[in-house]
Image (cartoon, rainbow, N blue to C red; front, side, top):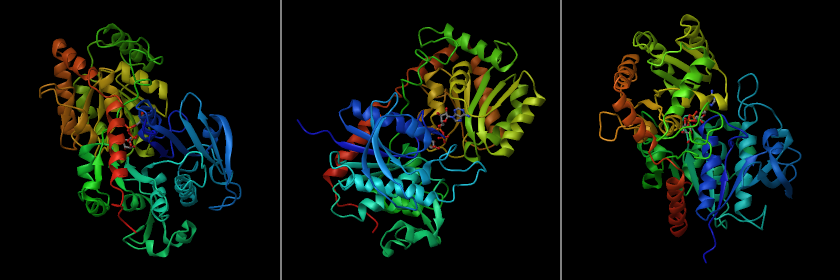
Length: 489
Ligand code: ADP
Ligand code: GLC
């Protein structure tokens, strides 16, 4: 029997321990789905307090000693509680022993030593790949997620005897990990890499570019986003680098974790339901109106938003469309956190429309489930969206997505005007286009047969991680078979 492919997933977040967005959901689910298909997958994570606390059976693998400005660095191996997967954790108190966001201090500013914090992550990945850190388990593939893990790619590439291949997944090209050039020496890489053909990006160091230049293969989280990031409109200044990698850039659509997002088994919601037993959704709907203080109106369309409040997500369009939505009789239930200006604007909207608009500023995983189960529709009007998970959660819960035709939203939602339609899709990033799209949802809801047919189709969408996990495994095989195509350097 062939030995299973050993895959090391390197990331800065994992659900439920540390999560700022969809990256954490992916890192929790994809490696498990791959393990179910026979791969030998492990994680490598920074040792934030929450990660160390949830690491069961931790044992020391190697004392690394002083590096990247930290005096005491150790590699541990254990299992995150509730997960079957082994996880390597970098214990470096000086760099990681901080509460709150993995990326920013309490003042909302990036941690000033993020270069060291995330270079260390990639550097340890490369040492695992080289067989130095844990000779008992040497990965065939180092799979790095987003800029936080991207430095694994040049560190592996610059160590030629390393047999492992690297795959770099872009979850969001807009966050690039840019640092001042004068910190170059901290990275310990050859000076020829300090050039536009290497890590230099317009006079700064770019970790994202490091991943894009030095990974054996690049993936991103939907086929449409893979095409978009090769264009100046969506390429965030790196479209030339992406185009330079040509066919080595692949879009693989994310899945959703059925163990977490499934209305038939969800502990967080008022009543469980599935495509055959509808009544539960009605109970969730009423419970949500009650919980949020929305008018108990069975006829109104409840539109939810569960999102980071950032420019990416296009939520200014929701605010702009609000008068129109209210005129249509829509109830709006928002949960989000982020940009203070958007938070304030949504809070004002709530105060101005009691019973019709409810806004929960903050982060609450269980309430996200109740919102998605209880609403009729979920709005994701993003300006760009690499994949987007909440519209897929909406599909799974029979909560029809209202989305802009962009990135992964375009790949996961079919407009009800098309055969097999599962939601409502609009093109222009304007409040009027969003309002017109919601108006179509309101009209469809008045025709219960049409609405239920769309719900049934939405809930039947194959969204599991099985397919994507297989695609990544096939990619690993391909890249291992054809080593030598590494760019950069
Ligand atoms: P992104 O990663 O760009 O934020 P995704 O749609 O891929 O967008 O993933 C967002 C994830 O974060 C989902 O799991 C969503 O439920 C969750 N989420 C976002 N905002 C909140 C919030 N305020 N409270 C709870 N969960 C949230
Ligand atoms: C990023 C993207 C989002 C994607 C998620 C998981 O945060 O913004 O679109 O779903 O990563 O891949």
